[in-house]
Image (cartoon, rainbow over all chains, first blue to last red; front, side):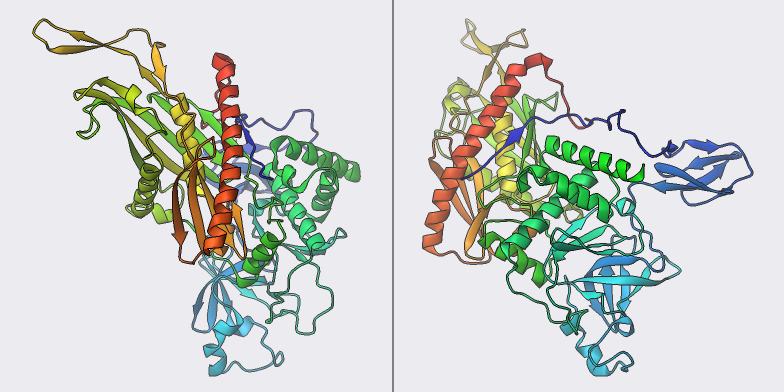
Length: 294
Length: 291
């Protein structure tokens, strides 16, 4: 039966003042004066003009001893060494792939940074170069780690571990990088029945939990068998929950996603994207998270 | 058209999902995303509407101007469509990139409205063979999030519903020259009857089934789609096949039936929201673009 719902637009309201937030944040817009004290060092997102420290981006002011920087809320991904990212291959070049990771420049995945079947210390031969497209094509998704940052800001990635590599069936959600919390591990097997990779660059990958431990993981052979309906429902629900959390600007980490999933269980999967249901679920998640801290 | 690149595995996942009637965002094959409709957003037009369907954002403005009727239809007014794909939607539309898509959509709209009964064109006539109202319908694509044609047709219907054409009186001079007098009262105007205005339903074939209201990702998985325009009573006014793939005549028939069913629900929902907006009158809080 077809279901078509239409509604009148509602003005975007600010987060309810009654909702407690963790600490007071100093929010600035471009052009706002942060401080007139000259003793501070200027960090990212600031500049000095007429002895005043002024913000150049819209975000929150962070201070570490004498260093003042402004962390923008909506920004491209700025890579750090050791970050886990999920990227999409855009080009196949000589001995390397260009990967799109929502940063200012495309990241680079060198052929030598890739795990090839045959062992770790195999020398990359000319046949490997010609067969690059057999491993990763344009449009493929990979999970990788940032190895280094070039001088122009481009990232160099590597997949030299069995947990990284080409991704199979699943759903990709693209969010702002500033909403992904930095944690010890970004690969989570959620108890609700699906797994999630929270890329630091804002690409979230949701996929069905693999049944058995593959020896050839970092897999070059993608499993194209149909995913069972129960797993699909979990994945769709998780995807909608993540979209709800992002719309309400809540930080994404495994606990917040799990609480949001549990709060959404009474509703139908497609109803989660309705504005009033979204607000209700995220409010419940927020309260549970505060209860966890306190 | 704006498109995303997907990996093979993602496409297979989407296709298998459609087979089991559970799409990536939890919808069924015949469900639409929640649409936001608002009329009267542009002040210097005779009628306007803005429709947001997921990530697709369309703005339509209708301007009523005086013109001469066409030679073959001397006692009717007419509609002119123009579609502008703004570079706001995707960088591919920069410069003249969006022209091809714009002309395709405009031609589709002409075809959809080519049926005689969609809009009462005789009511747009002022003086046969001399003066008539020409409605210039301008469509602006602000964001491309899949399913452009459906969103555009919903916006066009809402804008036509909102259009207010000033009432004119024709005064005859002694010499026989006619003068047209516009009434002073800004609320003295004629409204169009949009009961028979059709809406476009796009049915895309993914695997062995067809879906309505595709997102950009689902569009990348579908090779062929059928565009049909349906009136609120369920009558088909036009049909067009798009895409590189082929369609079986059996599936075309099934898609037409689905389209008629979905079209009726779409018209009911749209009319309900337009009536609700109308009943709020001046107390309605206008959201517009900065809401």
